[in-house]
Structure formats: structure tokens, C-alpha cells
Image (cartoon, rainbow over all chains, first blue to last red; front, side, top):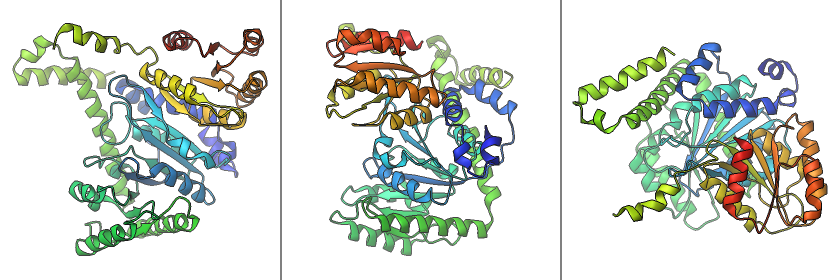
Length: 310
Length: 145
């Protein structure tokens, strides 16, 4: 499938959407053992797609903005968008509603939108997100967008999986202060004040700008732009898209792609281990938990070794 | 907390649709989707990951979403009376997209007289609005597991 998609001049026109749809379902459902088996069967995927992350608090307008941005950028790119919504911790179920805000993406062959549920992940992403992104790259997309669940203060994980991270803020939500607390100011490459027609948008943009100038983020000389967007204003979407292009150009000139690949691999391992360890801790029974802590750790490590050995 | 108080919580730990991806879709022109939304919530509470299309979607749109989302099932909510035509369009486009194995269910105002015809076209289940939600969930779980 990937060869087909890559070899075709039309690219996404030859994309086997059914096969990709199933592949992503399989990966989303894969437990650690299955992930290891799949990786052993097809190791060394060479990532080629540019990756853009969209994050921000719930209700900031990420999905609508992401949809518009995806449509705009699909003029230049074969683009895949992964949008994550929260799962209910009680039932495991989820209403995946991001794409209801993206109706305009539907008729575009070069665009592929996939909704994901956060399931057990508590980092704003979804389990096996690294595998899912690899699968999208293998399917021949040259640009990927990743929209996190609405995040609060602790979910920086998306930083590890994308090249360009856009933080979406809205006036009046107080989320700018939250973002400052969380250190989101240090991790974003582009700041967007969305719903720019609302009162307070200009002031919020000015404040963010001032803080950025006073405390430039430690990211090697890139001064994050602060943009005002409104989903109904096509020009503002085009400006955001241009800012993303500028950041991508800057990254290419900087030439630290290898370091970012390493970071992604580290995050991939970290999330796999975190999920597996959490399951194993859950599986310990009352008697196990009465043991000295070192023995509890040993129990878990032994089980983890069994997973690695297949 | 007494054991009596815990009992209802124990009941909801049964999630027969966990891990299933179900598209709830509104084809055609009727403008009422409270039924579809309630069914979507019932499916979520049964553990399913539910994608909802919103109102007035074409068969082409619904099939594109079902395929891209890797759906296990599509539930079509139809109140307009044109269920036979709309179901036919969706089934045909699913087959064209190589996705004839995605199971199709229909809910809404569907007269008894049309059930046989819909089943002939490949519909796996028909849920009229008087049917209890528990029964819909049970039936779907049986069809998908």
C-alpha cells in the first residue's frame, strides 16, 4: 500500500484508504506485545513527513482551526490529520467529535482525517501515537497534523512528536496564565490567539508578545510569532500557514532533524513502558502489594521481561 | 459507603462494545438528531468509540468517514421516510470503496413493511424508536463480537 501511494504521481489518489483505516485501528488496539511484534516485522521506518502539532485548552477552537488549516495546506501537501478526543475513564467509550467541525475536509482526496480516543493515555495524546504517526508516514503523506485533546497544565508530550507546535489560546479563558504556569510558553513555536473577534483578543496577543520578548524561549533563536486567527477569516488561516512554513524552513536550516528523531524514539519507548508498567501495577493483587516494595518492583520487572521476550 | 450504594457502579463496568468504532450518521434531509445523539451516548457508555457525522450528510460523505475512521459499524439514523433509497446508496458506495464488510444498522422511523427489504440489502439490524437502548446495545454487541 505504501509503495503504491509513494509511487503514484497523484499520491493520495492512489492511497488505499480502507487499508490505512484498518491499519490504524489495528495499531490503536495493539497491546505492547503486539507493538513489539509489528516493530520486529517492519523495523526502521524512515520518517519523512513534516509534523505539525495543535494544542490548547478545551474549547479553544483547535478542531475548527485545524480543519481550515488542513484544507489550506492540502493545496501544497498530501496531508494526514490525527485528532484526539478524550475517552471516558469509566467506560472506555468516547464521542469522537472533532471531525464534525471539519466538514469542509470531506471532498478532498489529498486529505485524510482520523479521530483517535485518548484511552489510557494521560498526556494529551493516545496510546501508540508514535506507531500511528509512523503508519501515516508509510502511507505516503508528506505532512501530518496532530491535534491533542484539550490540555491543561501538564501535557507536553506532543512536543516530542512534532516539528512545529502551535499553541491555541482564546481570550477570556484565563488559559494564558495556565499556559505560563505550565511552561507551555517554553514549548510552543507559534502562538495563536483564536476567536480573534472576541473582546480581549488584541490585549491577550499583546501580553503574550511582551512576555515572549522579555523571556525568549530557550529554543535556539526562534522567536515564536503571535498570530490572531478566526476560523471565518481565510487570511488569518493563510498567515498561520505561512508562519508554519517559516518555522519549517528555520528547522531545515538549523539541521537538527536527527536530534528530533531521537527525541521521538525516546518518547515512543517511554510511553510504551509507561502504559505497560501501569497495567502491571494494576494487575498486582492484594497479597503482592503487601510485599516489600523491592519485591513488588521485581514482580513487575519479571513480567516486563516476559513481554520483551515475546 | 454501603454495598447498596456501590451496586449501580458495579453494573456500568460491563462494556460490551469496548474497542469498537461505530459511526452514527444522519443521511438525508430530516433535521432531528436528538435520537441519534442519545444512541451515540448509549454506545459510548457501552464502551464504544463513536464518531458522529452531524445532520444531512450524503452517502458519499458517510462512506468516506466510515472508511477513513476504520469503523466496525455504521448506524444510519433516518426519520425522513426515504430509508430504502438512502440505505441502498450507502451500501453501494461501501462496496465500491472495498468496505462492504462494514456492518450497517438502521434506526429511526422504519415501518415494519420495509424491514424485509432493508435486510435484503444487507442491513444487519433495524432499531425503531420504541426499542429500549439496552436492547440496541445488546444486539449490536452480538453482531460485532
